[in-house]
Image (cartoon, rainbow, N blue to C red):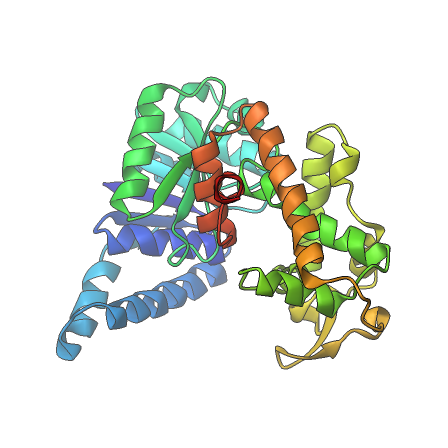
Length: 355
């Protein structure tokens, strides 16, 4: 099978690596030649790390990597991708106008049976598909970063997507040893919507001065999460998390429960985006956390860690119920998505059963 990847950034490279690992041929396209060169290096490094984890003879690792890389080709135009690929996965910037332009070209260049998928995490599948003459073969395949590590893929049909396209795309995801979950075409899909209170409610607690940044992060780590909310925002980037928060909030009709915090806007405006700028909720030196940001220095309060965690988890549980009631996904798929895509120790409905 020939897999076309549009966009040679971190996500596109990671998705390409998955296809190559599975033995598929990958046709990679980007308008930036330098991005393609970096992608090739990134994919080689990723395959080498993967080979080191397999039960291979050390002398055969280079052959294994070279064998998979032999399936990687660069496409000079979108027309070439559409013409040659059986499945195209677009992983370009999160711009509806850009994605519609890409899909318009791919739609015109490809055979009717070609699947056209977008890796968008926030944009409407229906809106992207409007740019095509065959919206029935367009859907979302939302991989999580880093794609070679994260097992979850949200499979998101648009209103016109046929069952056959969904089934074929799901089978492809499974052949790459990923776990597909079905989501309706709603703002944030499953993970980015249901997990939104993980940061929004933490920010509410901080705004109220009911607990400090360090207290909140520690409480969530104690509850089984690998990172606290503020650690996670700093790692992801405040610009990214704030844009996602605003997009989901507006897409759902601006519900007060998901209203973005003014703290987020303040940090983005100040250029304090987290690890990548050296300061967010914490300060960093050469990527290592050194201290809490001066902006958030404060004395610990008497609020118990269990109450901090309970408040945030209750908000997540409430959003999970809202999402299921809205027809976004089943309870089972919400639980699975939160565990695999957001590192929850338990899904919201599993927590309810365990009580």
